[in-house]
Image (tube, rainbow, N blue to C red; front, side, top):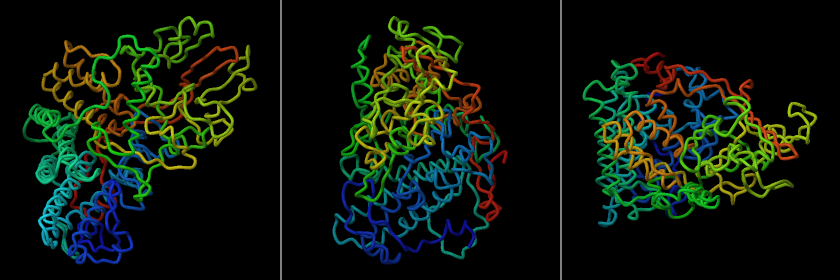
Length: 633
């Protein structure tokens, strides 16, 4: 059977998952009791139907078994490593987006389990399952009004799931095949074609409105299930993407699969602004940023900087009831059958972890100073423009700003582990600070290998050197200081939608339609929560645009949003560059040297404009030749 038939074919329920892993409540059925049921029996019992819906939730990320039991973005190879933010040290080759090698026959992670929530086959498999549920749920017997209400709510949840999957398809491939009902095996599918990006957007918006109409607000449903807020946040995300340059004539302007042919970009920005404003105004529930949004102290102490840093870091470590910053996400609970292991995947090798997704030096420099000023490598002094800083102990004492990690903004300390950063107690003898540098004998030259001792978290360290950083940094954002990754998985939340995204989406849309002051005021709420002072509202549109783009990169670092941003802004050619390591040397007498080793390429990268859109796999095109391939493939 060709795959297009498999995608559209009518599902026979062979194996069902036993619960929704995001829920805090146990569903009444276990895996064994569901696995033997046929499709017909599933829709004869409302509890079995609820379990079937749980499978659809699970498969929003990837079908079970594709990559552990993980769903959505918290995987070993983060989507951020497909951008200028990070480097995947273990599998850089399959990150074909930044290698200039993406093609219909070479999709890398986009064609495998690694990025399952962006995979054509995976998404259509789940859409197929949702369509089966929608086709049958009205006939599920209900003995009470409560069960009738449950049916209506589950139907709305299914619309949300389908809209979510289709939004990821649109943002990855453009206009796609639109399916709203299951098909019988054996039907002829040779006439099925991709719809325009405009029709695809309208189809998704229709599903979103149905979801909003049938879903409760937060607090009226088990945590992890869809809410009005989740559906409305999805609408904002979709409309923001659809207002961007990429799909408004910036690329293949005459191709209706990837560019809108009617209406104006201004109208689409206005639609995005309105949707975000409605959300912020509380139409779909009360949400807010964690922490204060008041102006921070002008000259914060070290303790105050870390207080802001820890508050921001805590957003990504929530294990129980979510705070108001999280609109919707995935709760990783081992007792619910799903898991994630970011401490093991991303943590320093000197703690027996795998050290993946290393922040790059240019991205580290994007984090501001604690007073909100731009970090400038050359500001205090340097040996060589942009590449080397060096200072003796006495120089550092008199001018601590010579240390590039001194008094940076709080989000830096919540996001990045650098040489000297405080971290966990070592599982073996050693300091409780990160060692990504090299220790040099007093008076010796740092180029003399015989005078060097490698730090415990380098690729020359004594513990699992092959997992050491290739950039000089580790990602801290999703690491739980209470978890030893060598032994334990994490049980935190992946925040798919955060209130900060709604604020920055509103800020961007407002700036694009010319409402500069409104946009900057929304942006400043995100900055104030992060411990940074306000941006000025009296700036040009171009400057305001740069403000919001900078804020998105720093605020959402590691969360995968950057991959969509550099595409929709069409700036990939400016930011996709070879990756180089920063070598750090620490002498016994306190002298320090930070050297961005641009003569050593850690990952060679190349940008090709065709990669602004992911192509449809050659296997799919061969099986359904009537489908139109994306431009320039």
